[in-house]
Image 1 (cartoon, one colour):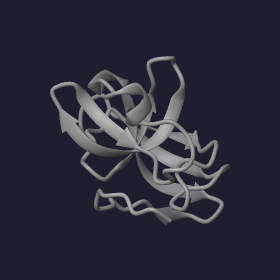
Image 2 (cartoon, one colour):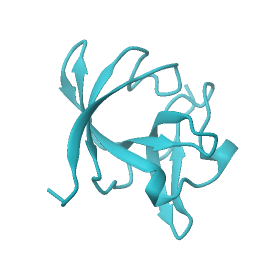
Image 3 (tube, rainbow, N blue to C red):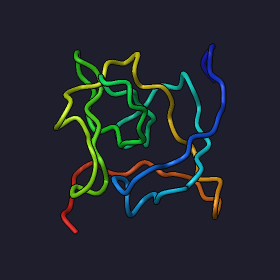
Image 4 (tube, one colour):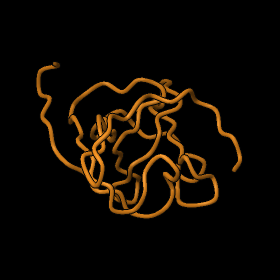
Length: 112
């Protein structure tokens, strides 16, 4: 565990993370954790919106995040890279309605 890490909960809104997550899912998250490519993360967009997305690339500008459902929602293709300070948490597991761990996904979109 890294210093400054705390655990919390985040609720999924919208359809941008389908099929991995659906509206209403409750996630166990670790604030202050360092994401790894493929993690589901909680981010703050430039307009202040907090969202659940997939971390797909890290570079000097921060994290490039994408939605699992390319037909819904907002991601870095709309707002650019997310600065490290605006990656608020890493999602560890869905705790409701059916608990299950969230595994890292190999990055690369496939159209439904």
